[in-house]
Image 1 (spheres, rainbow, N blue to C red):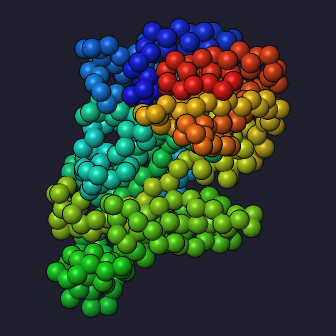
Image 2 (cartoon, one colour):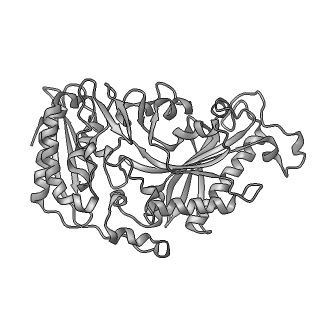
Image 3 (cartoon, helix red, strand yellow):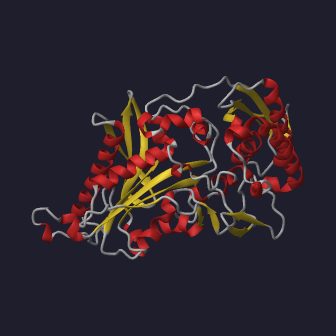
Length: 447
């Protein structure tokens, strides 16, 4: 469902989406790949209904909000498709870690997990990471829930606790993650993350340090901006140094030795202290990842009470768009060989395809008195417009002085990734969107 408001119009939804899909599929199907038929009506929900996903059944409830558009993307695993730009970034990172960090017996120190199911429990996605019950990141408006207990992971960190509990102390996790978000050339409801964790024993951390035998990992003190209450300052500084050195080497491997970087203090519920890494690329400072010293409470709960560690997470699309000058995130889902062939390992520096002209249409409407959420509208746009929609901007808000009703005006940019769109083609999709917004979101059109 596209949010709670869509429950009012399930039958209208089927008609409108079928109508719009017939239009958009005629222009997209061959270029963007076939859609699994089992997912065609996944957003409908009736009492006792279930959603089938990756061979399992999940009963739907009042929390279910998984759209058909998103369902068609689950299982694509772009990061595992050879010569895809996301696969290439993953392989370059993996190769770096395999070569730089070797265990006692000459085997890679870091294990790699790149095929874990994107369906996780809410406990895995939130509670295991110490995310409070009232934290805004749990909102239904920001996540894709199968039901109250299961969801599509919002980050690869959802697997941290399980892997630590299995006894691993150095690993990479790569996978697709899902978040409801705005629509523009930098955002898509599915993207891909690479997560890394490393734990240290007392011996490993203090080896080679003068008088290291007398140093300790833990103490009972007070939490400060620089450390947790259970960590010694010596241990935190060594873990922080190792983390930053690891990431500096990784970015130099990807971008070159002359890369300029800086660290910005930030907050994450599952690390402290926490940092964002920014790189100076072509004269512009860009944030590329988040990291920090793992919360000891998380590490302890997973059964590694005698260890301390760090974690970081980065977005593969973010790095690929910077490295390969890819202008639009939708290109990662393109199956056009002209785009994909540029990313054979021996030919990674070619520029991506040039853009075709955009077609821009506006839509404005009065909001209902309650139960309107912008992400519901964005999901509706994605469902009906598909990957023809490049960007949606809220360009105007107006409150009527007498009725006190609120009006929104959105500018929708349509652009095909492989040919020029006509205004006539777009008009059919735009009209279907107008009808759907009225019937499913309860808005009053100003068309």
